[in-house]
Image 1 (tube, rainbow, N blue to C red):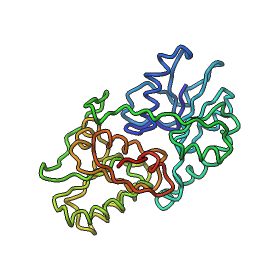
Image 2: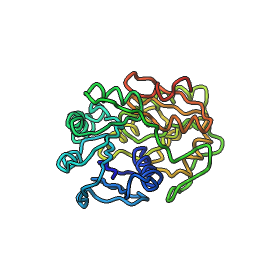
Image 3: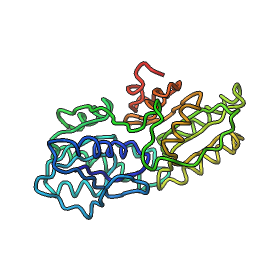
Image 4: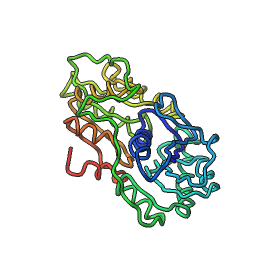
Amino acid sequence: MQIAPGLNRGDAITNEIEIIHNNILKISNYFSESAVVAEHIGAGIHFSAMQVNDYVPADNDVLIYHYGIASDVTRRIQRWSRPVFLIYHNVTPAKFFAPYDFSIAGRLDRARRELLALRRICRASFADSDFNARELRHLGFHEVRIKPVLIPFSPAKKEVGSGAYSPPLDIPNNREVILFVGRLAPNKAHAELIKIFKFIKLSRPDAILVLAGSEYGGVERYREDLLKLVVELELERDVIFTGYIGDDRLYELYHRARLFLCASRHEGFCVPLLEAMEAGLPVLAFDSGTSAVRETMQNSG
C-alpha cells in the first residue's frame, strides 16, 4: 500500500508512485494486492487511487509512505500501527514559501518535526539521493538506503503515456529555445533564470526562454511577481510560461531546445536534469550547496 499526501499529474513523486504501483507491486510475489492512497488526488491522475478517508487498513497491510510535506496522513499512519517503509523525497525549506503563503510554509516547517515522529515507527527508510539520505541520518534514522529514481518518461524515445497529450506550443521556428522544466514554485528560482536570460539575449537576440511546468497551488503571487519582472526587463515576447504540458510536448521541447538552464536553490534530486541529458541537451545548472543538483549532475553538464 503506497500512501502520499498528494497526487498531481506531471509530478516526479506521483510518477514514481505510478511506476511502483503498475510495474513492481502488482507483479511481485511478495504482495497480494497493490493500492495507492492519498489525502489529495489531483485532476488527470490515470491510475487507480483512493482518498485516505476511505481507506481502512487490513491486518496484513504494509505501508510505503512517500514523504515530502506535512499532512494528516502522518497522524493516521501513527494510529494504524502497521509496518511503515519511508521513501523520503525531501522537504523544501519553508523560507522559500513564507513570502507567498504562510499556510504552505507552516506545513513545510511541520514536516521537519513530523520526520522525528516517523523515525520511531519506520521499519526502513529510503532516499532518492545521498543528499536526502544525509538529512535522514542527521535526524537519527538508521540504515538509510539510497534507491534509484524511477522515471516513466524517456526524452530519448518518443514514448508517451495515457493522457499525456497536450495542445501544440506556439514557438516560432526561427527562435532558439532556452528551456527549464519544473513546477512554478519559489525554490526553483525562476526570477534568476529570467535575469540570466536577459544577458543571453545580448548575444542571442533570437533566443526565447520556455519555462515549462504547472503552477504550485497557493502561490499565485509568485507567478504574478515573475510576470512583472518579465515586463520590467521588456521580455514579454521572449518568455513563455507553458503551464502543465504532456509528455508529447515535453519531448518536443527537449529536442527543440539549445540549452537547459537551471537556477533552482533546493532540489531533492531534480529529475529534469537527467531528462535533458538523456535528450542530448547541454545543461547549465546552479550549485546552491543546499541541493542535490551537484550529485545528480556529477561530472556532466
